[in-house]
Length: 309
Ligand SMILES: Cc1cc2nc3c(=O)[nH]c(=O)nc-3n(C[C@H](O)[C@H](O)[C@H](O)COP(=O)(O)OP(=O)(O)OC[C@H]3O[C@@H](n4cnc5c(N)ncnc54)[C@H](O)[C@@H]3O)c2cc1C
Image 1 (tube, rainbow, N blue to C red):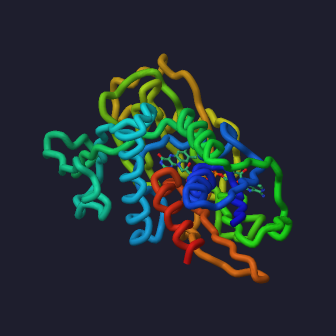
Image 2 (spheres, rainbow, N blue to C red):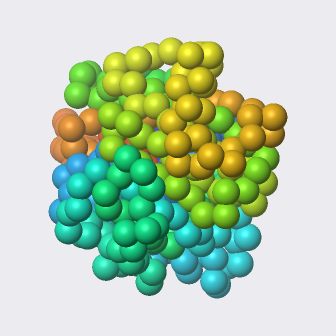
Image 3 (cartoon, rainbow, N blue to C red):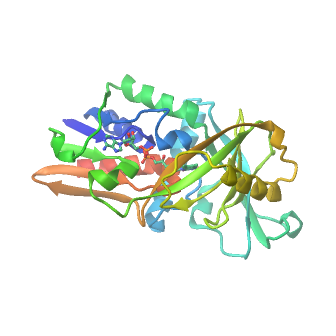
């Protein structure tokens, strides 16, 4: 059966792969491809951040975690690596629901908690290097027989197909007149220096992260709701560096090698549901906020379940 997936970000490619594996004939239609999608800008640490509803996002992130570990162990993708990270919090709280999925989760000792914080935990989770992962997803999609067409759509009605999977991210604002999808702007910095382990303060209002990869460490961040600016802002860079230096005093600004900005497709809740319009089936899969990579495989599996229902 023919299926059109709208979008070639991490959501569209992962969904397309699952559909091809299940025997569907899949075409992706997208106006931007890697390296020009938001997905290419993701940091990308496995962490369910800025994505609701929690009971579903916990399940999708758990399913994705299993797949990332399989891709590392069985398919030997060297650009996915397990990394230690410490998250610092102002107040003690119960472990998050997703903590039980991780093979390493422990509460920090008092002497391991940094100044200005009173609590924290250490986890080991995958870091996905999107500059390698996105081309891998695209080539996996194509090797399974998937076709990619570059085209901007103004309306899903333009597509002559009875099965459509809508993974248009922020584009859903216009494509589906869904004003609930808003940009949450993220600016990041690349530094050629290894912090040893990642350090995090994941509250959206402070948002500090240092994510070590094989090539660089990603420093962030900002979470500016409703901000459409795609240019780098100097004041944001200073703001990010000042925050990161609190968690990582050894950070050396001379090692900065690059910067990027991406607009997270944020929504009060991820829209992952089936809609029947004029006899055609549309599966919506967008609005993943700051966790599109973390949720990608779980959501792709859910897309397939909804298609086969
Ligand atoms: C700075 C930053 C750091 C991040 N860090 C992380 C992280 O550590 N972990 C994590 O899990 N997530 C992270 N994210 C979030 C993650 O990047 C997003 O949630 C994810 O990329 C969304 O993927 P997507 O495929 O849904 O959308 P996109 O990647 O935006 O893809 C949308 C696709 O739809 C297409 N499209 C849209 N409208 C149309 C149209 N009208 N016609 C044709 N095509 C259309 C686009 O061309 C594109 O191909 C981060 C994001 C940013 C910005």
